[in-house]
Length: 189
Image (cartoon, rainbow, N blue to C red):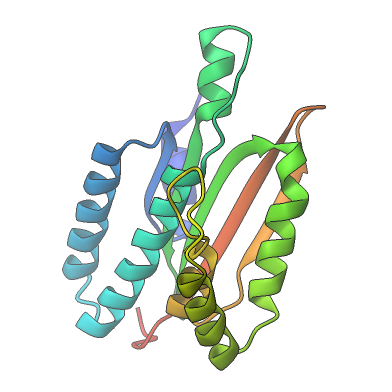
């Protein structure tokens, strides 16, 4: 039997403000953003810090919503739901906020995504700004409607390198984890 108190204590010790697992919808995005904004106001974080975290969060969640792979999965509704599910958590640590997402993707897309993130991580602040402008001016719009700016924008707004991991779950799918850290202005929780 699941011990919910143990889960509660684990979430408390990891300073998790919000966690969610399931299908990401536009309505859910709005709700998550409202909840996080309210929680940060309750915690009386400086307005500049709240804005920075909120802007990064918007980019991350939009990226997750718009770019989760469309899977042609045969199987039970439960299997389909698991593959199309995502996980999201935001933690408020003493020195930073951590935003963690996880979702399935087709393993054939891992190399391209890893190369893109590695390239973004290789750039300094000025290079990121130039790359952002180049990508914006490039004018290419993906099938999903994006211009390839998501990870660039997340790195620019967070001011940090993007941490990630891919776990191959079977012959067809991998699980992608993204961790974005936003340094706190006021470092005393």
